[in-house]
Image (tube, rainbow, N blue to C red; front, side, top):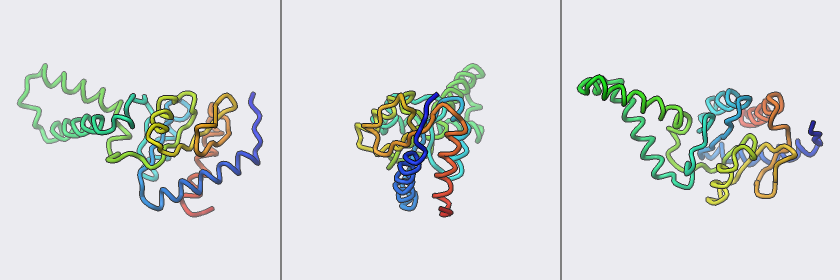
Length: 188
């Protein structure tokens, strides 16, 4: 069981809050990454409340470093959904529609949460940097500041705003998110 200095955690979390609040007030995009089962619903709720982009299923390699190409696929996904909703796919055979439906379902898993991310994020929030090494690496390559909840088995050196806390405990992640929400709602 990891033991954290609550005072140090609060000091570092407050630094991250000040940074994120500034980004939020400037209306710049923020991307949240949390694919662990304990973080998924917390991330979806938090992101949905503030309109942040999020990844809760699987980090696609190149999400940040190959953003333009990925964005074209997201646009294609949105077009497929719109065409289906308007009945434009009825002209295809049953087999072709089935193939398109399967492709749309697969894209929904990969792109839901980032489909409205039209530019690179100004900040990336990562819940468990060890589990999301590729996301952290891509953000570092592009010099995008990272706020990360880190357990004692993580390296905080390359993280702009490390927040030491148990990244495998839902109540710990919930506490961090509650503090972020309080700050973003101007209640702090």
